Length: 503
Image 1 (cartoon, rainbow, N blue to C red):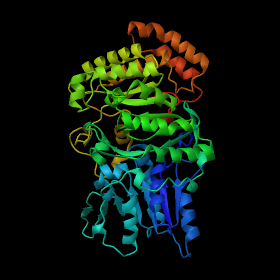
Image 2 (cartoon, rainbow, N blue to C red; image 1 turned 90 degrees about the vertical axis):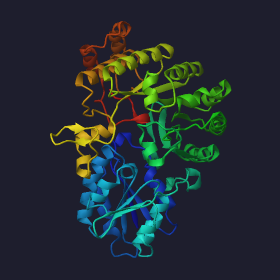
Image 3 (cartoon, helix red, strand yellow; image 1 turned 120 degrees about the vertical axis):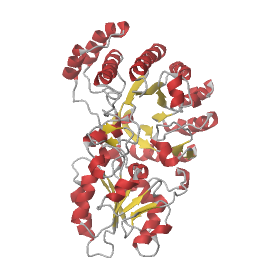
């Protein structure tokens, strides 16, 4: 038996299909027995669940012969490190495998961890299957592309990059291996929202993006008809009414968008996806109408900055004027635009922040339904210097333990990174602006603020918004704290947000 572990990345209320380990399991040989241990489920103790599987299979002809963890940067890494240590301590003879985005970006600290035996870099479906041959003694590990490990002399072997394939060349998601209803959770899109990924990679060259570091400027896209087939199963058999796509770049071009609309229209789903500003502007009005009719409800775009000079430095490939035009097109067609911005340009942080805040006001004037997502610029590599301060140019941590500290988790999630050029007052400026904006224009994601709180927030923020006064909105903070049915949940992200981003 193979155990595929999805360490806790969020609170149980925010859980979604564990797509990464589902994909690995689906690609295993038909005679291979495997189970998923999802640490995001409610009332689960992953360590005990793993131990139960090991004990149940012990003495049978199918003992647990490998335990594999998928690990993303941020909260999941912080939970994966102690869990992996504990598993290795209890079951020292069972090989421990890591895969996922973190190890693909930073293999060295994973290989420095004595409690991790093997690391899979990049796409793992085929590499994992070949690793099983290695574990059986039938293959030399150095011949497996994408496989990394510590050699007997302590040196690290980093396998050559594997040619990765698109979802269309891989098996369908194995929904029979999970309890689908447990993962269909309410969002603003619907009462039974699911997730799906129809492509891998991104063809663009934004120089701050980790996707490019893993996949390069390449993208493999599944045919819309196959995506619709899988989604249709979830609609018919489990009543899924909405879906969030994890694709980093959902639309290729106008023709692809029309194919998506035609394939999705019969499903009756409301959906969210991520798209490029410039790609959206190439859509005809007819394509926009078809997408709206097919259920496209919100589209996320990386706007990043209101300065063309900064966008050029980022190699973003778009202009601020194009973002304004997308705001207008989405308003015309009744689709909510969600724009993300990166605050804290190292060269002129204060001037860039003020410019971008002014730009966001322009977007709101064009499309009042526009949603704002904020991040603080967190370049890599970076680590602590001899004085204990984070030096953005001094390299990344060499151990998983350091990566899992709160400071580095904040860095990876862009929550509250320690940036020498970004003073606390500048972060506060952004946060206060966001509070005024989201009080004046409550987010469609916000299901946690009582109705009276939204009404009071709108009234109190109206004058501030018109005056451009965001300084220390104490009364708005008080109203927000009193009107919340639950505390802010910073572990929500993307479609999981009920209150909007980074509040």
